Structure formats: C-alpha cells, structure tokens
Image (tube, rainbow, N blue to C red; front, side):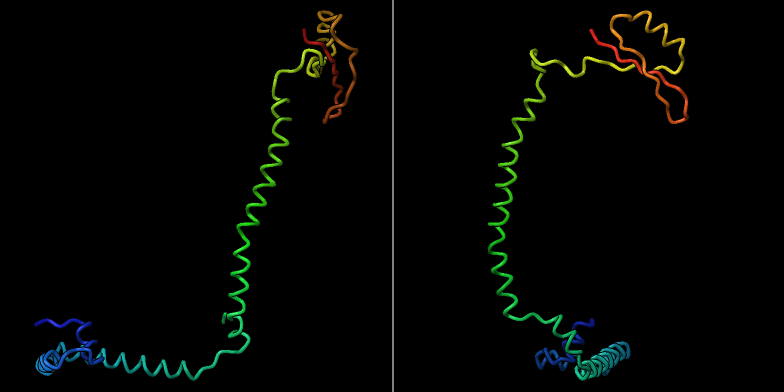
Length: 168
C-alpha cells in the first residue's frame, strides 16, 4: 500500500477511521521511508504551531489596525454612495447627449458645400518666392489676378516675397 502526504496529514490530524489509522500505524512502524515522511510532517506541524503562537503574541499597532479594519458604519456609507452612482452616470450621459444634439447641427452645416451667396474665403492663394526674377516672371504672367508683392524676412533673415492671387 502506498501512502502519500495527504494520508499522513489526515493521520496526524486524526481524521481517519480506527481501521485506517491502525493500517497506517503498522506501515509507519515497518517502513523507514514512510516513518521519515511522518516525522518530517510532524516536525513541520510543531514548527507551524510554534510560529502561530509567536504571531498571536505580537500585537499590531493601533494606527495600522485602524487603517486595515473596516467598520460597519463605513460599509453602510459606501452602499449609500454606490446606490446613487447610477443617477450620477445617467445625469452625465444626459448632459453629454444634449450637448451633442445642440452642437451637431452646426457641424453638419459647416461640412456642407458653401452657400453660393456667401463669398468663399479660400478664393485667394498665397505664393511665396525667394528669387526676385521668378517673382517678376510670375507677375508678368498673372497681371490682373495678383496683388502687390510684400517683402518679408524669413527665419534666416533672407528676403521673401509673398503674393496673393485669386483662383478662377
């Protein structure tokens, strides 16, 4: 008969019937390996009991105990708070939905094609030139559509010419 640790633990804790206890006692007395397992488990049990007694003697500081412990009053307050959680979530959802309904028509109006009665703001295009020769060539080709060039200094303090032209 093979005996594992669980059977020996049950034997030590006296959780077996009298017949099974007698069989295991005979095996412990006759087999050296089972006897050493039994002694190691019995030793482990005694060490565990001693450590439990030592831990019971040590007292936890009151401040730490108060932080860890949960009072019945605190649990009642949290239940009340969580009961109102759905009301808060529903009100936030309603606020967001109403805001979306108000702002959505304005966004859809802006995304449509522009009204033909309103002047298009994108009708002018700005061209930038670094060389005065290319600027003069461009102005010669587009005499009627372009404005007067403006001199601007860029990041490197070089002169840049900006011209605004109408798109046909």
